[in-house]
Length: 454
Ligand code: TYD
Ligand code: MG
Image (spheres, rainbow, N blue to C red):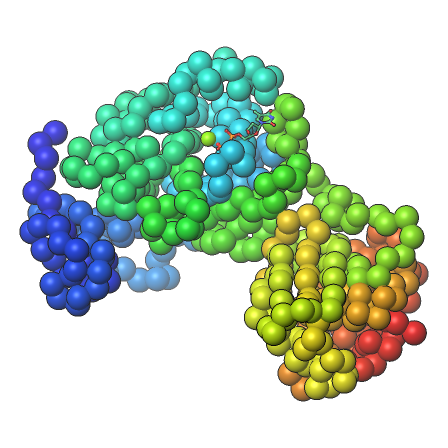
């Protein structure tokens, strides 16, 4: 294919320059010029970015067909959960994550299962057929109908895919794919964006579901999957601790389902195994009561989850005492400590505070506020929260305990795992769901601290 003319476009202001320069001539931003195609034929100039646009012109919304999407189950329950039920034909999914976390393993397993029912294609730009074969053998997959394509050129790949017409295509990884239209190296922002645009167009046209594997760089942003998030339908990220056996997949964006859904897997010597009852694994199960440990009931996506929050408070030798969080937002902790100081009179300015959510889960919801404060106080006073207690609740700046969504669900989850007592916002507790669990409704921070430690 002939190389198109390329220009350099500023990613901040959109201004162009025929040559690469360090500073944008228009907006004066530094290092913002990226290579892109100068002249695409006018008819499809923007077609890559408007995946669902068509030639129909203006239509009535009422005339649009509204049958629910047919979602194909992947055969892996936890993966279906984060996908919002299964793979939608014609959708594009981005699976991101650190190197070595298990992206290729998961997708090889998935295609191994899917290829028994539909036609699948695994495009590998990273590993040789032999490496993939060895992995499939280790995973004990049925390789009869597992179609493999070692290819990194997007045009050649799509030409072959158009002939065999697969239902599902996996691209491992988008950073290794390049298009003939651009001269920059594979993995550069321009290449990643243009190759992905072609793949998105192909998916919408052919009805194939495409899964793109994307690496996250150490800095998290450039040339990584970030530029793709707007173009795809679903974004899934692997999270979790490197050392841990458990692998979490979180839905960041989903045009076909809920976001923040969490899928839990365990890495074994035979690949990823799904964990369908994650509450059981995240609780460390201390033999006796320990100060600084609180069990919280969070709700990740559509499922409640019991997690242990640990805090350590230690006298500080620094002018600026340390506030360190793993799995929570740091600023939120500073704010909560200020609330505890003002409304409960607990002084922390001469203490280092460390908070950790066990299991590498990242919590974004406010229901963690009260558990965090109780863990901190328990550590400061060196007094444990009685065993069999679970906690959830948001803390407001005025020292009030605010309700959180799905209270009954959370209470049920705690009861299911044998908890005897739940400390929760008063408004989340109704008389109806008084089961075999003691519920303590609290309205003020002071009340909650008393209820937990007295
Ligand atoms: P991989 O899936 O290649 O990671 P990615 O594609 O995200 O870079 O490999 C994940 C890691 O898992 C690798 O270090 C080897 C390990 N592993 C197992 O522990 N068990 C297995 O069955 C397989 C296939 C890999
Ligand atoms: Mg890989």
